[in-house]
Amino acid sequence: DNGLRHAGVDATRAQFVSLWKAIAALWGGNPRIIFGLYNEPRYGYENGQNGYFDPDATDQNGTMIQFWREWMQEAIDQIRVLSAGNLILVPGLHWTGCADWSGEWWGEYLDNMSNTGNTRLAALTDPYNNI
Image (cartoon, rainbow, N blue to C red; front, side):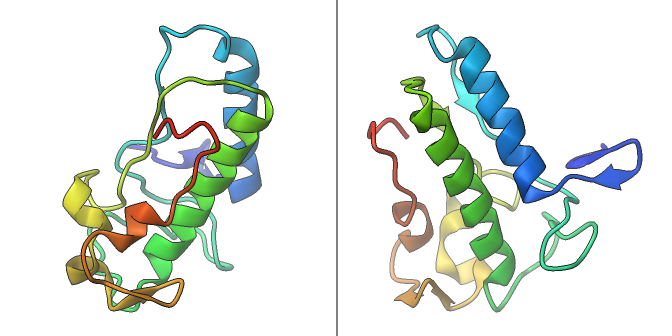
């Protein structure tokens, strides 16, 4: 599994967002296409580090999931800038289950929000309300 890595080089957030912008430009007009942003993220360049995302990490301080949410939000924003109304599936960081957005696994706070309930997923926004 190469994850967010190609030819041994970790992808940056800008490259990830650029990829989704290109996909949205090509397929955004097709209502039969669903955009699954990324399943079970691994590797990638973030916070000055190659191989940053790790679905096996506990991320107790919540920084990894915060960065992942930012990657997802920027991709969503660029998809919607192109007026692509496709359904967008947003994965969690730890094996893509909904529970992986909860605070019990990822630490106490994200964007100054306590981990009561599923606050991490609630932090994502979509102007089309199609998440």
